[in-house]
Image (tube, rainbow, N blue to C red):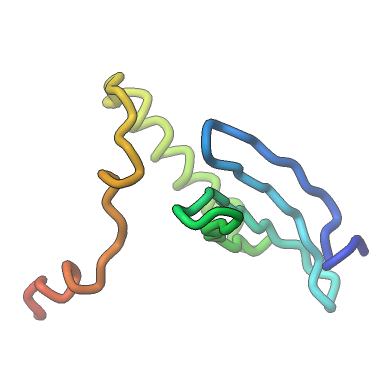
Length: 102
């Protein structure tokens, strides 16, 4: 087992973001994928890190749904100039709370 359970790691650096694709092993020997996005904040030397864990037993379905999303973007995506980080919308529980409950 690697350091911090990592058995394989690769990264992609694009503009102000770095994506890490880490295959890790838990204490039971199960493998899982940890996808991490890291980007600088307005505070010097500080980074915002967000991650998604995909477990081995979910990998096939995850890839299938991920591929559907990629195919959709390829078919319907447009070329627009990137928005600044201040214009990006993030998840807000307040917006979710405005939905009517059934």
